[in-house]
Length: 267
Image (cartoon, rainbow, N blue to C red):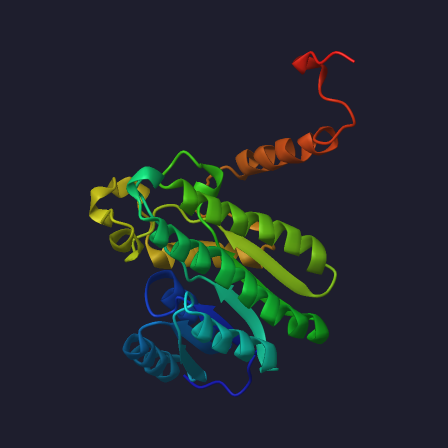
């Protein structure tokens, strides 16, 4: 299949396997050229060749470890300078399942660097160009643990809550500038993520684990429906809507001159 026209270029992080590789395939099929970012150059090269052969799209690779400042800066510079870029999928990330007391703090710092710092810097790098062109896509991969801090590792869930908060805030900044943003909150997904997190996926109940292909396809349907928050496994969207409405209802009551009467402070 060959295609002469393009919708622009989407840069995808963590693109060599799993969710990122599926996003690469789906965006190529939708008529986008690609820039694939990951640490494994050999995997990126193989995937790029496969996608070009399959779809006719132009696929560049940019090997980088986003926890290494020099590598991250290379990706930031590409995002800031390449006028063809119309989309960013912040997929790169890793997690942890052990309690904080049982974890290495250096590992937690690296997780924050990747899940929070890199995501923020790449988003900031691409944003001016998207705003100037008046169109663009930013998809941030979060996790259901953003809504369930009791699960897995608290630092991990904290980084994924950050992704949700940033996406919601960013939506308010750019919703009138032609830029669509989305946070995707996958549940357990059948990828190498679980091996790296120390809990191989075969240890999880089978009914919990969605394939990466189904997760991405559902999320792209949500994107096409202009969902800001997409939870692929959630059957009843009213549950999310009630959760979000309850959060917003707190707003007028969160900051007051005086402490709440229930604390019994005397003047």
